[in-house]
Image (cartoon, rainbow over all chains, first blue to last red; front, side):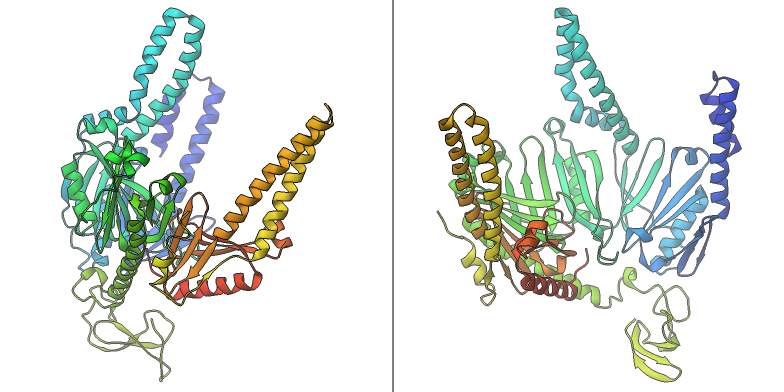
Length: 468
Length: 168
């Protein structure tokens, strides 16, 4: 920490006068000491089934993170921490995002080891089991990344540059005006380009048993896992200029928090790039992993839609089967959206004045998020009506099916097995049936049937029932 | 003009659920709003152009009132387009004149049921109910509900949302 202080003060204030240097040094030392204190008072321990994190000097904050509810463990290395071989663990739990845990900073090997142990305990195997190997799917080459970023925004610069060059020869005042606009825009553009390249540099996608594993970053690096069952929708975007190179971008919308569990708050979803730029083949393979459903047969809107949407008619396509809805829209930015019917939030049918003239209507299947939907654009009225009925009933039965499978015990899947067992050991299902101490702590003892906790409890010898 | 194209299709999946519409006081409220704004505009326009003579002043006031009349005709149609239906598994809301919209929100997907009443709505003892899901786009909103109906609908939706809740 002292080293940082010295480095920062020496590096940034080589030409400053002495008093300013003293103040800056004090500021740096204060920040450094605060960091050291925070680091000193942060303690963590992994005892079997919970990870305890205690932090804070004045306001103590003690968190118990049940390993069974862990969704993902992300390893984040900001630039400075990375220089010193440190890493931060972000532990995401099922349920509210407010309950997530953050452990900063651990030395690199400790962080990696703790991540492997957490995941092993979560999956109910021996904590010493190393993390299963990721199966790498794709790595984005740096040249392609830079090219794609420039192509998506940089194209507008070519006419601007020409305009400036022409104007300089015609009139100098106009050149100054246009040049200053150009400069303001250019600074914003460079910032945006830098942000996109530095965050997506070295983007590597891999398939792991617990989801899609992504690592990326130029200065600071992020290694994150996207759990597949949290994916709400997938989008394949092919902008106009990217199509020349057969490039595409794959985005997923991931549920952040389940609102009901977070005390009635609304759910947050975030959009993440699964592949910032890549070939359709790699994208198709990732889609098959994220959405393990058969692809529906796509159909085109009726010919009358050609008059209503002369430009985008070329690409308009949509279709659905029992489990999945797919829709293609857009002329300049061709966008294909997949929404699993289980994840459908609502269904809308819109009939605009122009559409009514041509006997058309659009059906939206909304998924969680801001503008996440599969759009059956410009279908005939009869088709729109039947879509409304079909999609409503199909998504209802998909939801019911999921609920049923969630309530059923699933002994074959290590994922769903309770991580706690009566003996306190990690692997579930090993202890014989009998009365054991209530894991919830509400009652004296609770009956364990050998596989699951039952609703039968006993308090001071009096039997009763209370679901766990 | 095709009248309510989707009623027949929607009806056969649940025959018993009737289509309900907002209270007729909503129409009175819209009338008051339009009349207030319209007469104010007519007054201002009339006063401004009235300095050049009586005839242009009266003329501009008449134009403003005519536009108000047109707005009232449109508002009448819009008021009549609102209707909602509580089916076994989802709530259906229909609205719109130029853009006809039909929203289907499953009870299991509801996250929040908002009941709001603005100052004018309170004057007419009305309230608006709004359903929120995790999708920002699903806009099931029903305005102009009588207090009794709003309370009943809120309770009904809350309890149905509880029993049919589905995770993300």
